[in-house]
Amino acid sequence: MKFEVPNIRTMKSTFTSLVTSITLIIFACGVIAQISPIERAQAEVTKWQARVDGLTKEIASEASAVPDSERAMYLALLAQMWWEVNQKDARVHLRAAANKILNALRDDDKSDLAKKVEYSQKTIKIITKLDEKFAQDLVVQIEKLVNGSNADNRKENPEMAELYANLGLQMVEKKPEIALSCGFDSLMFGVAGSLPRLISELNIRDTVKAELLYSRAMAKVEENYSEASLLFFNSLGRYLFDVYGPKGFSESIRRAFLSKYSDRVATAALYETDRPARCQIAYFAPAVLSRVDEYLPNQSLPFRQNIQTCNPYLSGVLQEMNRAQTNVDKPKTLDELVRTAKETKDMHLKVRYWREALALLENEKKYDETISLLDSTDGDDYKAISPIGWDNWRGSAAFQAALVSFEAKDLPSAYRVIEQTPKRIRPEVRMRLATKLKPASDNLFY
Image (cartoon, rainbow, N blue to C red; front, top):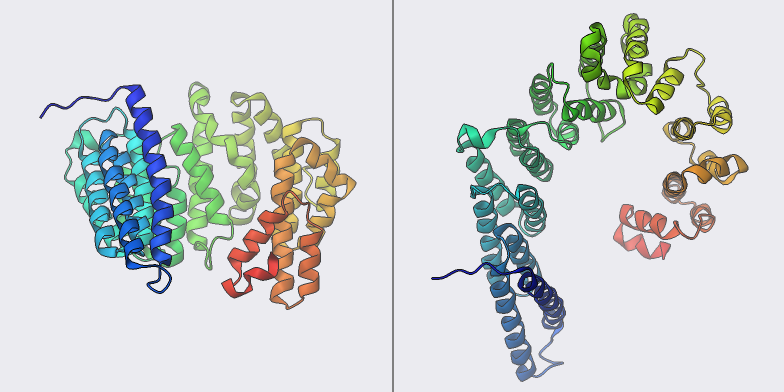
C-alpha cells in the first residue's frame, strides 16, 4: 500500500475537519443521551444513530492522517463522548487510544518526542477519568516498555522524565506503589520538574515510599549543578516546609535536606574557579534562611557567609535581593515588611517584601486582615507593580474568608465577603467555593 505524507495544507484541512466533526458528535451524542421513546419516534432515533455512527467513522478515519500520539487523544475523546451512551463501543476506542500511545512511545523516531509526551499525558488523563483500572494497566505497560528498552533509550531525556513523573501523579492517589515505580522510571531519564510534587503527594499516602523516592532523587542530584538539579532543590524545599496535605514530611527529612543543601552551597563557594558554574545553587538560599536558623542554628552564620561569597556570581537583581535577605536588619514583622516594601525602589525587592507580608497573614489564617491590607492605600502600592499578584492574593483571601464564614454557618458574612470582592475576580471566588462545597450547596453562590 502506498502511503503519502500529507502536506501542510492537507494537515490544516484535516485538523479543521476533525474539529468540526467532534463538535457535531458532541451535539449528536447529547441528543441521543436525552432521547426518550415517549418523546421521539423510533425513526428519529434511528436517523440520529446513523448520523452519529457516520461522524464517529469520519473522525476515526481522518485522525489517521495525524501522528499516533495525537490520534490517541482523538480516539480517547471519542471514547469519552460515547461512554454514557454505548460503553461497549466506547471501550473499542479506549483500547485503540492505548495502543496508539504505546506505538508512539515505542517509535524509534525521537525527533518530536516533546509533542508525543504532551499528547500522551493528555490522553492518559482522559482514560483515567473513564476507567482507572484500565489506565493503571496502561501505565504498567508503559513502564515495561521503558524497562525493556536498551541503555541508549534511557539516556538523559527531560521529556520522558516529565512523562513518568506525571504518570506517577495520576496513579498516586489509588496506586502509590505504581506511582513510586513511575518516579524511579522518571529518574532514569533525568530530574523532572514535577518530581518534587510527586514525592510530596506520595508522602501524604505512604511516607515510607515517599522517603524511598526522596533518597533516590537526592542521590541522582548529588554533586550535580545542572539547571534541572537546582530547580529540583528549589521546588522540593518549598514542598518540604509548606503545609501540603494532611501530614507533612518528617523532621528528620527536613533536617537532612537543609544539611545537604547547606553543604551544596558551601561546596559551591569553596573554590573560586568553580563559583561561576556552581554558585547558581544560592539562587533560592535566602528563602530557606529561617529554616536553617530553626533546624541547624550552628550552620546559620556560615550559611549566610557562603551565600555572600556566591552573591557576586548571580545576576544584579538577585545580588540585591540576597544582600537584603542575609542582612541581620532585614524586616521581619508585618509592619516592617509593608513599610520597607513601600520605601524600596527595587521592584523585585518590593514584590518580595509584599509577598512575605501577605504570607505572614496567610500562615496565621488572618484572611480578613489580608483583605483589609490589600484594599487599603498601602495595598495600592503592591497593585501598581503586580496587578496579577494582587488579584491572586485578593481572590485567595476572599475565598478563604468566605469559606470560614460558610463553615461557621454565618451566611451573611460569607455573602458580604463575596460582594466586597472586585467584580473581575468575583466569579473565580464563587467557582472555588462551589467546587469546595457540596454540590447541593453550589447554587448558594450563583
